Amino acid sequence: MKTKYSSFVEHAIREVPSGEYMCPAQLEFFRFRLEDERRMLLDSAKGTLEQMQAIVSEWDSNDRASMEEKFSLEFRVRDRERKLLKKIEDALLSIEDGTYGWCVETGEPIGIARLLARSTASLCLEAQERHERYERSYRI
Image 1 (tube, helix red, strand yellow):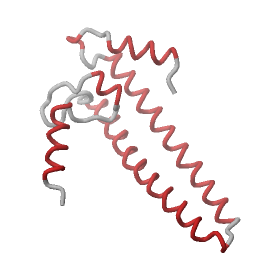
Image 2: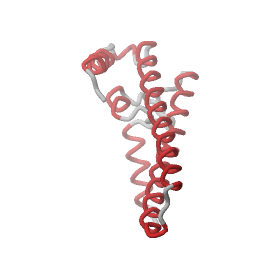
Image 3: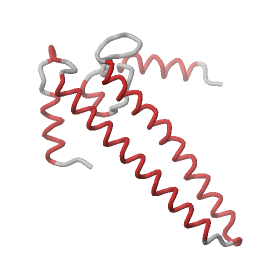
Image 4: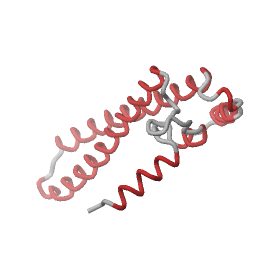
């Protein structure tokens, strides 16, 4: 959820002169943001586990198909979140090793606007577009 404060901070992060790309203030901003995303994902997963345990304890055999469908959907969502959690962990590690914000393919800056939209981005826009074109071309 965006607050006036987070909007102000985002604006301040965007206004850092381009020669100071990924300065300590920007890195700290993205570290905080990634840690917050990680915390929310873990809290959500914990809540889901508790809900599923409660549902199983009240299991009605007449609702079996409906419950299996709900569980299947939850597992797909959790799998996507697990993959996102891995990307968050990788992004936090890249902050530690000084590579955050730089494209892993080209070494070019990913860009503040792109990182604000997707904090886990590891490719600059051009490299991401090439990657997506390649995937579409060779999809079976």
